[in-house]
Image 1 (cartoon, protein in one colour):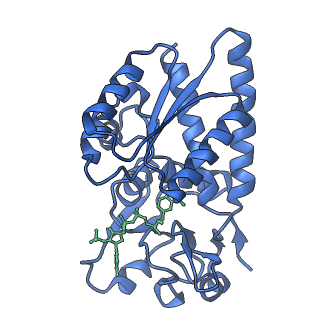
Image 2 (image 1 turned 45 degrees about the vertical axis):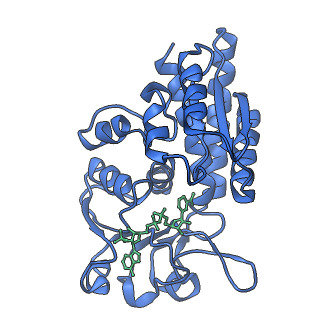
Length: 281
Ligand code: NDP
C-alpha cells in the first residue's frame, strides 16, 4: 500500500506552529493583519474568503474584510489597494481571484506592494523565485514542497515531472522543485506523448484541471504522485486530476482529494502573512 500523504494533518501542524509564533510576536507587541478583498459575490470565492478569515482567526492573525460590489471599477479597486499598501498596520493584501471581467487581473496584481503580496502572484515575487532570491511564493506549490518534505520524501536528484504550466501552480511548482535540486520537466497541452514523459517521474505533480485524467498508464511503479486538481464528480463528490483508485496501488506515496494539497494552500497563505510581518518589522 502507498503512503497516503495527509495534507489535513500537515496543514494543521503548520497552522499550530504559526499560532505559537504569532502568540510570541504578540507578546512582543507585534500584531499581524491580512486584508482580504472580494469583488462581487461569486459563491465559490465567498467560501474561499471565509476559509481564509477562519484560518486567520485560528492562528491569531487579524483580518480586514472588504466585500465590494460587482460593479466596482478597476480604479476604485486600485485606490483601495494603494490605501492598504500605505497602511503600516496591514501586512498582507489578498484580492480574491477571479475578479469581474471588466477589471484587468494583471493590473490588480501589479498594484499590490510586493512586500505585502502574500499570494506570491506579483511579477516581482515570481521574478525573485526565478533567480533564487527571497520573496513570497505562490501558496499551492509552496504547500506541495512542505507536503513532500514533511513526509520524508527527498527531492534532490529526483526526476520531477509537472503536468501543467499555469502561473499559479505549474510554473512556480517547477521553479520550487528546481530550487530543491530536482531534475524538472514541465509538460502541457502541446507535449508530445505525455505518458512517455510522465512515466519517467519519480515525483509526478499533476495540475492539469481534468478530472481523473491521470491513470496508472501515466505513472511509473513506485512514483510519488501529488494531485493538485479539485473537481466535483457526477455524484457531487470531490475528486482530483488523478484517478486515485487506479493509481494508488502502484505508487509509493500519493495525496488524496480531498485532504491532500487543498488544505495546504491556506496554511501557506498564513505562513506568508507571518513572514510578511517578520520582514516588515
Ligand atoms: P489551468 O487550467 O490554468 O492549467 C492547466 C494546465 O494543464 C495548462 O498548463 C494546460 O496546458 C495543461 N493541460 C491541459 N490539458 C492537458 C493535456 N491534455 N495534456 C497535458 N497538459 C494539459 O489550471 P490550474 O493550474 O489553475 O489548476 C490545475 C488544477 O488544480 C485545477 O483542477 C484546479 O482546480 C486545481 N487547483 C487546486 C488548488 C488547490 O488549492 N488545491 C489551487 C489551484 C488550482 P496549456 O498551458 O498548454 O493550456
